[in-house]
Length: 120
Image 1 (cartoon, rainbow, N blue to C red):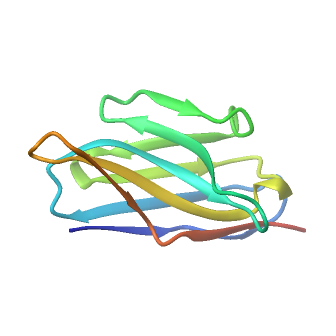
Image 2 (image 1 turned 120 degrees about the horizontal axis):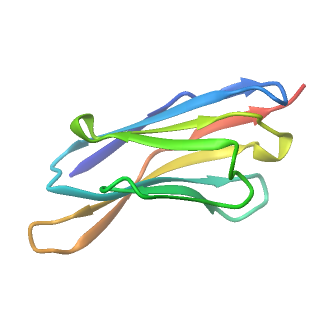
């Protein structure tokens, strides 16, 4: 089994910054990719950013230039540095990790979510 523990959410003023962390633990053969999704009130969960095991990154247009994803492979940890935050970034942020099993299958795991609120 795999567990994901997120931290770093909170309340910040517009223009401020926050840094989210997500640590994966448990039976981990090989992490294929790590990333973040978010879900605002009344909206569907949406993809925000992802990073592969090789370090390739992709960002949603809405966060490009403001958010930066990074990972520490040795610690199975992914980070999301969020700068220039806007009220529309307010959402519950979920860590997403895809792990390749010894049989070559990909399993997807989700964190419990951490609230990010951008408000003055």
